[in-house]
Image 1: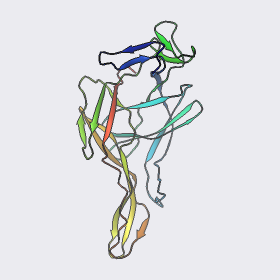
Image 2 (image 1 turned 60 degrees about the horizontal axis):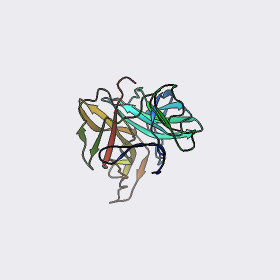
Image 3 (image 1 turned 90 degrees about the vertical axis):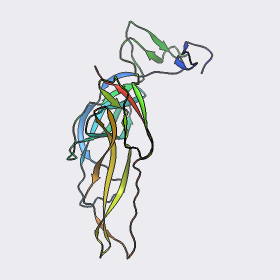
Image 4 (image 1 turned 180 degrees about the horizontal axis):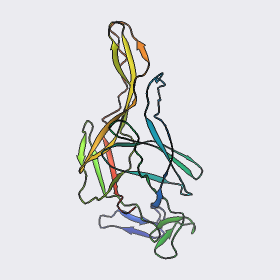
Length: 246
């Protein structure tokens, strides 16, 4: 941290604002621009059924964009983020119990690039680049942080959050998820599952949906099995905001 410029510490000695850092402000909602098939990284789909995921997009000069997803009883998560110039794309899954996609708001926060003629703003040392803007758009403020230990499926969210939204990257996957089809012939089918977030009352849960079903059949020798690549149930920290009013 620079020894010059504008700086604010809290009672614990932590930096709240510093002119060589930067904050994030609300940019708006990303727009739904299309649907696409769930990803299949191992290429084992064959004649498989894959659900539709959704592509959202926001165009902004901000060099940093963080997307937050409102929580519901559906299974939501961010499968991927890509950037090309000022265009940011988010591939989102928000699947109902039948694995159908359900449109949702994608609230985006980013580094400020414009400012109000009123209110407080702080620039970095070059005198041009905005570090913080407190007059135009809502600053990013976390409403809660919760931890799910490895293997723990749910946790209560902090009280007082009216409309919880999450920095919702996927919680893990199993791909391929092999299932035995014909034991006498050693035939296994390659499926896949992905975990995301859901909300039940005030309880945040890991939720799971199929990303590929009815994949190709593969045959293995006597006593052999394909194993699996299971990356579900890992320890994770959830960052929450209150999206009420956005």
